[in-house]
Length: 238
Image: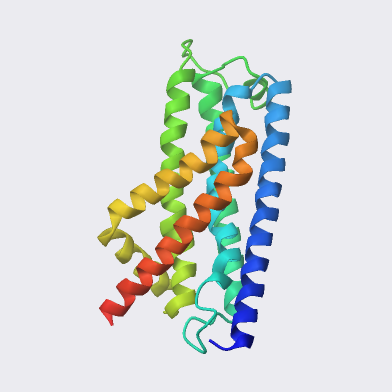
């Protein structure tokens, strides 16, 4: 790689890491604001649902890391700005839709099974014949869903955009290639999703300042692992 290529790669890396840290600060700020509001309305038990929901935006943030891969290649792997914007728009719409659906369902479940007298239950006129408190079950279900959302984000969000960066096959075929790849390496995806979920939920719940370190560190590690792994897989398939 010539000096120009090295400088471009370094600039791309600095920009990616800078934007990633900025995005982490934004997510952290939003999370703390939501947590404060939930505490004021005595709904702190529901904070874990928002923490799990934040994972759905992982594909959107991962787009910032694309300059980290293949910056030393002339043609293959170079992502056009128009393609990047298409991926950005598609991921943004899908992830926002998933997040809204999840939070709406979480509010209903919380109001039905955790706190039937909560502010949310009264605001949405949600009533339940169930008088039990399932807050413990609600907590563990949300932890499982955090892992599931992480897995969903990797397969439906991160990988299709990553494949478009490496060897664009078209929007539909990128998703098909992602499913095919994830099916063959489901164990690796399961562990990657686990580390991603832990890196988001646990720090936000119990060690909030460490989120500023764990989230970008885990996301970069998972992203680079998947990119390198898929390059090897794609080369073998070809």
